[in-house]
Amino acid sequence: MSPVSSAGTPRLRNLVRGFRRFPGSAEYWQRRYQAGGTSGSGSYGEYAAAKAAVVNDIVATYGVKSVVEFGCGDGNQLELLVLPRYLGLDVAARAIELCAERFARDRTKSFFRYDPAHFVDRAGVVRADLALSQEVIFHLIEDEVFATYMNHLFDAAERLVLICSSDEDLPLGKHERHRTFTPWVEQFRPDWQLLSRVANPHPFDPNTGAGMRSDFFLYGRRESDPS
Image (cartoon, rainbow, N blue to C red; front, side, top):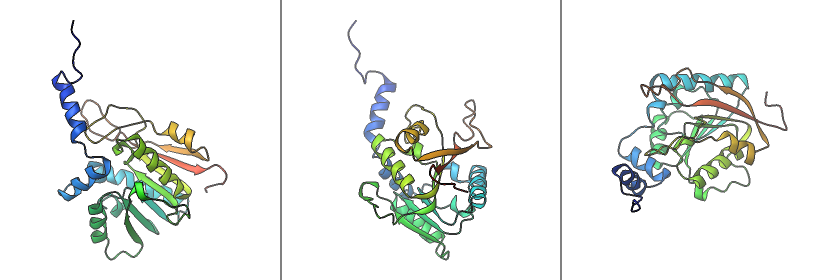
């Protein structure tokens, strides 16, 4: 039997073409917003409301004074959050423009473009009580981009890190790569510990494709009491 080419079936050919077409995590989102796209269904409707309820509760419970979010998106999710002071970062310049327009009269909120390859903050200028990541991790296709993002996220936190994401390994999609990130935190950020995991009220249904794969993971520094 002769060997089969790695691109010899329609499914494999489509997969190879998908890799070739994918411009990279940052460029994908810039193009998406430029084309009039949104941050996705997770930032709208009942899913957004469920996420906001968890974030607002944690902010109130722990007396959070400031928040920096890595991946603010188009700002629709942010409208549901009650935060004393907020800094939103995003790789897509268009997302920053949308947020600047949406919150033009809100003096408690600032927005900057996040360029992970040129983000060097050894002096801790970008710091907040809580560093927030909402359904961003599974959009980071590249391993290096993922590791850089995670380090920047934890480095920006004074007391708490709150991550909303799936925590399971699933096949690579067009612009999604679900991965188990909690082992990464245990290995590379041992100065942080998982304080709690909050399950979302709309669990994913594989039969219908509806629901959220993401839960909330709250981390605190080991050397201090976050409360």
